[in-house]
Length: 368
Image 1 (cartoon, rainbow, N blue to C red):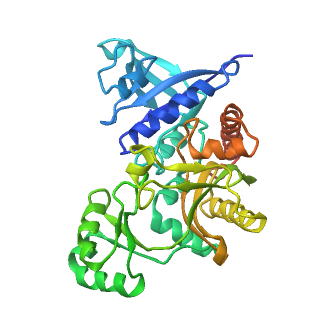
Image 2: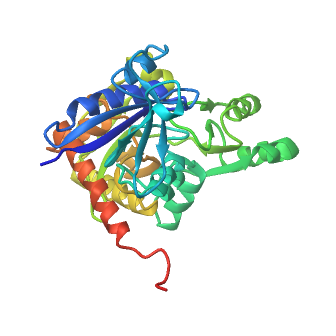
């Protein structure tokens, strides 16, 4: 049987570039070599596409590639793939077919629907959610609106745009004080890995926190602080989805910020976490409902605040392309639920092809 060409795409222009590299290294090692040929595709911080055995290492070491070539992704559905530069002249570019894509990209320009739209235009199956779920899963304000529409519990919040803050700063600060109180969390609406987030303890810190968030997005969301344990649950599937056993994050800092996630290395994970059957089943139910609310596909990790004593569960957010190293929460949750890392990767590739076949059966125009 001819092996399929799977392009694992990593890196990207977001602040989660390094996280993506770590995830991709684990995935490329786990892909079934009897079924797939792996094409290593790296995107630099500047947005340049590289293909070849040196692509990953050149991005990791932040140096010019030695054995990787520049590439252009083709959006022609009759021949989806890559044009790979083999020399200085455009005439020396070669075509590399691609049968399926595993986009291991986190954050902006990778998890927000932009690159998913590129794959849709090219007519090639890819792992993970489509354009709608990816974009709404990235925008925390839209995400919560969809959760509320489905009757899911979320923390009280308000959001505003840069120009609204410029014209109505005093009024917005007063609204935050009255409706949310302190402490509260100030966040860029579209970003991941807790970048740009500030836990604000009083009104005096609001302006600084908003200024920080506006470095990363034109839209800011402010959320009421909710007491609770930080619980995460993984979802796998497409039309039918299943949830893993939940796990708990015990952050090393005041909250699970970027430093606590990737730098200090002092946060701990409890996988699985014992919450009692009733609370665990509610978490799993809410996780699947959140996945359906954004019309997710493939994979997602849903983050909660849980207070078992008060029987309170609050959905914080959904992550449609969670960290995927062998020790990341998403694969570890599935390992604790009986799905090994290699099997998980294979199932995601199968789900990608299943979703693609289903969508290919649709008509995009009436018959002539």
